[in-house]
Length: 151
Image 1 (cartoon, rainbow, N blue to C red):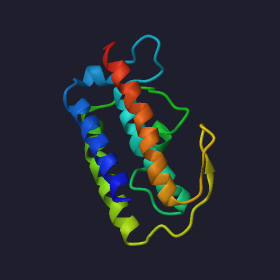
Image 2: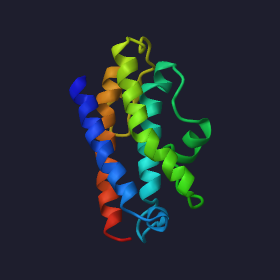
Image 3: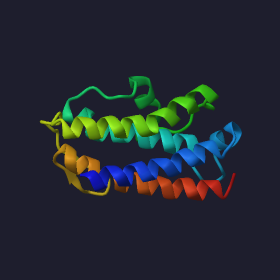
Image 4: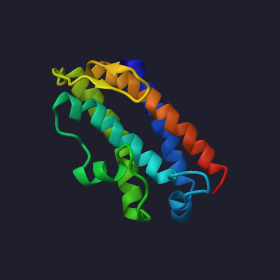
């Protein structure tokens, strides 16, 4: 599992660089042809990791219910995010992965509610969720790279 966490950290480093190299206006811009923006995709990545690993394990997530409602699958930006919200997402990029690795190594993830992903893969436990999450983050990182070309 160490490799899965290392992959996730590397991905999160790239996402942090996107947040730090774009203005608040750029982060909030939804280009023509897209249904969301840079900050939505990055916050969505954080929320989905928490839902896949913690919520489906019956454990307390490290993100608020409000954040989940704003960035879960099927949502889109309803209003511009603030600089404070961007800072919060920046912090969560790494703290969520660090805590997940610590909790995983401590054996915290004992139960899991199976979940069938949109791609048809059935996740049966937290280890599979952690691995699948890297695939999910890769998809959204590709979308982020595309959006960057249009802002």
